[in-house]
Structure formats: C-alpha cells, structure tokens
Length: 379
Ligand code: SAM
Image 1 (tube, rainbow, N blue to C red):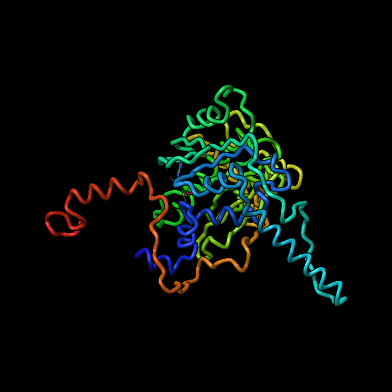
Image 2 (cartoon, rainbow, N blue to C red):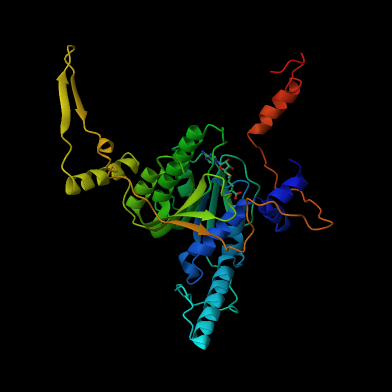
C-alpha cells in the first residue's frame, strides 16, 4: 500500500506523521491515559518512574517524555474538556430544571489555566529486542523481556548506584507484540507469553499501588489471564482505544493498585494464581472426587477427575473484567477511510525501524535474485 493511500485509510498513521510521533501507537497510550489518568495529573509526584517494555520504535516513550519530562499534557486536556462538558450539562440542567441525565464524573482539582511543570526526578527506562533511536532523558536497553538476564539489567538501569535495592517504579507499560504469523492461535499464545514476561518484570519493580498497562489479544481463553492479573492488582479493566482498529483482536489490560504480593520462589505468578484458585475451590466447592480409578496391567494407577465443564459450570479460575472503549467519540475512527484534504502531501514516517527483523530476509532474497530466484521459478 502506498504512503498516500495508507494516509487515507488510516487517519492515525497520517496524524502520527503530522504530529511527529514515531508510530501511530502513541494515540493508543494517549487515549488510555484520557480514560484512566495513567500519569496522575492531580498528583504528578505519583508518576515519575516508568518502565516502557517492547518500546521500539518509541512512540510510547515519546508520550512519556512529553508528559513527564517536558510537562506537556494530553490526558489532562481531555479531563479538562470532560469537566467543562459536565459543568455545561449541569448548568443546562439547573437552568431548565430539566430531567437531563448528567452522568457523575470524578472531579479533578485541575483548572484550564494551571501550567503544568516538568516533573522532578523523572526516570524512564525503555526496553526492546530491536535497537531504538535515542530519546533525550530516556535510558534505552536492547534486550529480550522473556529472557531471565533482562530483570537484573532493568534493575541496574533503574538504579545504577544500588541495583540490589532499587527504588520502585510507579507505572509499567508494555505494547509487546510478536511478528504476527497469521496463525491466530499461535499469535495469541506468543502474545500471552509476552504479557506474562512483562508482568513478571513489572512485579519485580512496581511499588504497591502502582499501575501496569499491557497489550493483549482477546483470544478464547483470555479470561484466565484476566483472573491471574486480578490476583495481583486491585482493579483490572480491558480498554479498547479508538485508535485501535475495532476489527483487530488487540486490547489493553489496565491494572491499577498493585497489591505488592511477593513473587513465588520459581518467579511465576501462575502458581500463585492456581493456589488462589485452589483456595476458591476449597471454600466454595466440594473438593474434586476422583471419577474413576483403574489399576493398569503395567502397575500404573490411572485416576480421572470429573471435568467441571461437563457440568456446564465455569471453572472457578475464570473472571471477566469490565470492558471500556476509550478515546473521545469525536476522535478519528481507525476503521474509516477519510478523504484527504486538497493539496495533501504525504509525509515520510518520523522514525523508520532501525533494524527490523525482516531486513535480513529481504537482503537475502535480493541476493538470491528476488522471489523468483535466478532460475525464474517461484521459490
Ligand atoms: N509501543 C511501541 C511504540 O509506541 O513505538 C510499539 C511497539 S511494537 C507494536 C511491538 C514491539 O515489541 C516491537 O518493537 C518488538 O521488537 C517488541 N518485542 C517483541 N517481542 C519482544 C521481546 N521478547 N522482548 C522485547 N521486545 C519485544
């Protein structure tokens, strides 16, 4: 697809280039922030230390840099607009004594003319498998978040002077995505592994009360993941920003109020969550009785348990979180095709990938004479 037709078919792709974002993903983080006040505009001291996982090419890090380091505000502006609309509705309701339904919103103590200042003591660490072009004030690491050596690297980057007792962070965000294969089950599986790797890192660095935001693909068994997240966060919501295509399985888990439970010895959350499930089973249900026991000829005792699904009962470990579409309804629709303004000039991407994984494959193919090779027959 050419740049110009992509500009037409993807308003956020065009806007990202116009507004100097390295990727259209920036709008997803901004729209999630508008809904959840991720960056704590009311008390900026509550959000100064942030880890951005799977960060390349770096548009989420750009948002962090512009809000925390430069003191700009995207979500705050949305909150101010929301409050203004709310006040206007209230005024109309009082004036006409009408039964206009004015939804309650939580009020924030911020006014339109408060100039936000850059926050003191900001520390941002960004990690990706791929190299990322530098951003002022952000420490970037090239590492695999699923690899065990990455945790000590991150702890060191967060506190170079004392990596063994680092100051915790307020927010961990992860936009990790595998190179999509098109095999849905495989893509969803790899995505879930990335999410658990991100969560495992988050649990090593988050402060109690901290927040965790991560991309998720809504596959068949996604409610198991939600249940596991709910074991370690007070509140878990699934958010779908307007800039994320409705047609895509992508959504974001927004987890608030980290409970700070310690990690299991084997560093996994899964065993913890299964223990929780076991607790639920003990309290709420009869312990499972073996359905049958058969002593095989080879001396192995085969025990089979009843499957709770056979009784049309949901297994106890499933939990469905609230789902929230976020981003203003007047925002661009990512699934719509828009007419380009007259004289539109298609801009180049702000930051082309530094070393994309497909580059080596393309070079190899070119060296071999293209898709049809030197023999002229398709490979
Ligand atoms: N949030 C980024 C932004 O705003 O520019 C976009 C992230 S992009 C959708 C997904 C990223 O996940 C890719 O850059 C990819 O290299 C990274 N990624 C995938 N698997 C990873 C892994 N195991 N460790 C670190 N990064 C990984």
